[in-house]
Length: 151
Ligand SMILES: [Zn+2]
Ligand SMILES: [Zn+2]
Image 1 (spheres, rainbow, N blue to C red):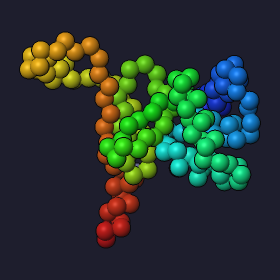
Image 2 (image 1 turned 180 degrees about the vertical axis):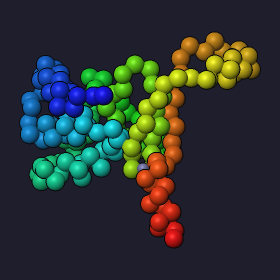
Image 3 (image 1 turned 45 degrees about the horizontal axis):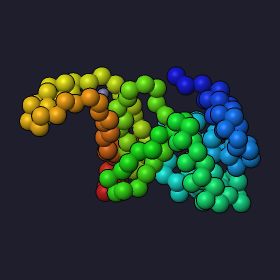
Image 4 (image 1 turned 90 degrees about the vertical axis):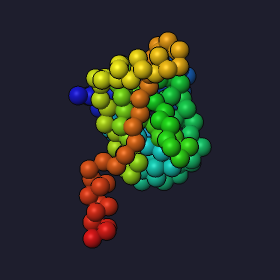
């Protein structure tokens, strides 16, 4: 379990240590990202934060995300459509499953990937050192919403 208020405070300390002023806007962005298991696209984060910061600019959102990524507090997820979503950084080596509907994320560890890697190594002659696994799909809630829309 992640201690959310503690995590947000930690991030704010990190930002401050690296010379960032802790404006109200940055606090709101940090709280949203630190408290969520979902991955936000920049526009989604902007929309979510604007409820609390009406004067928020999109550029501030991009800059804050960039800074948080630089500090390894959030990780950037690449999506099939070429857009990015940002997720609070996971602990250690994890595999990530992202809902393409709502951005909800499941992290999972545990590989049964070794046989695949061995086969690929044999086929290509590569010595495989690391992997980064990310899956895309629809979460149960989004599947249910889709079924309801079809009914
Ligand atoms: Zn979903
Ligand atoms: Zn793995």
